[in-house]
Amino acid sequence: MRILVVTDAWFPQVNGVVRTLDTLRRRLEARGHETVYITPDSFRTIPCPTYSEIRLALLPGKTMAEAIKTFQPCVVHIATEGPLGVTARRYCVKRDIPFTTAFHTKFPEYVNARFGLPVSWGYKVMRWFHGPSRAIMVATQGIEDELSSWGFSNIKRWTRGVDTDLFRPRPKDSLDHLITGPRPWFVYVGRVAVEKNIKAFLNLDLPGTKIVVGGGPQFESLKARHPEVHFAGERHGEDLATHFAVGDVFVFPSRTDTFGLVLLEALASGLSVAAYPVSGPLDVIGDAPVGVLSEDLRAAALKALEIPAEACRDFALARSWETSIDQFLSNIYPFEPGDFFASDASPVEVGGSA
Image (cartoon, helix red, strand yellow):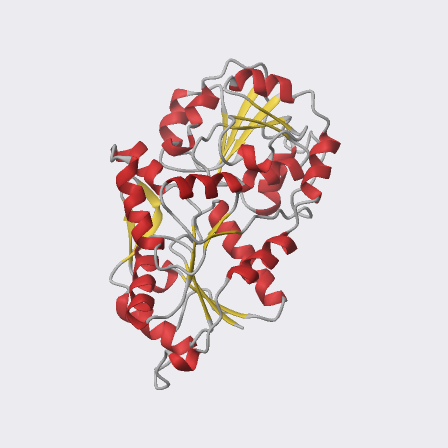
């Protein structure tokens, strides 16, 4: 099939959504599907207010329309609710082109945390955006239940997988030349932003050393406020995987993630997890003996030190990307492109094309 994916979240952002979509592209191509991604790379952009790492496309309508007509997809998937997602939605709704969407991020909660707007307002916008979708893909039962309570319907499961070749146990002394603090090492990997509730981790009274891997709008202020913490900044590929693997416990303070791909990456690296008992950790870990979920995050982190690394690794090995791709393909809505697109569109360069 010719599969078109529209996403506002793309490199150089480093987060679970981008890594999921990049893996999706590579796995779809490996199965013989032709894929094109429409991303901010193809447009003039401005930085997102309060989060400059996110680039927002400016006036994407004409280029979006030409790109879709040129590619003539038989599947349209809109991955995000930003300017590109809204433009693609408008194009498809106007022409009665079927499409699917995904709910990757709790934007209503994030906007509430940053600007104080009521969460209910945010979900009203989300219902408008996802309403025409033939399938709203979510990663977990917990998020499905939450969306259902807000009045969403036609929800389908699209779980996540983990690259167990990249994220694997490694010698614990691999970064001793960079990180000199005493053991145990408690690691956080993710955006350094208010919605991640990272202060809850940094304020814990824990023995040993806290390590923060990632960048974001709070990076400089929190680094200055917590000189006792090792801030590693953004890491990629093998370097990122090594920063996971050298830790002793992965601490996940977020209360708003829809899944938390980093949970599986930590487990694949042999790290147990300490987290709050909220959507994301509850769905990924539940009562499996690979993590401790508690409202007392300090107690959870200390208890997680007792969990064997082998149990964590074995748990992650059972969460494959192949299952995830199977689910995605079962959720999409193929159609005959000749029924919707003009045949005389001129070629347009599209970001992320296969």
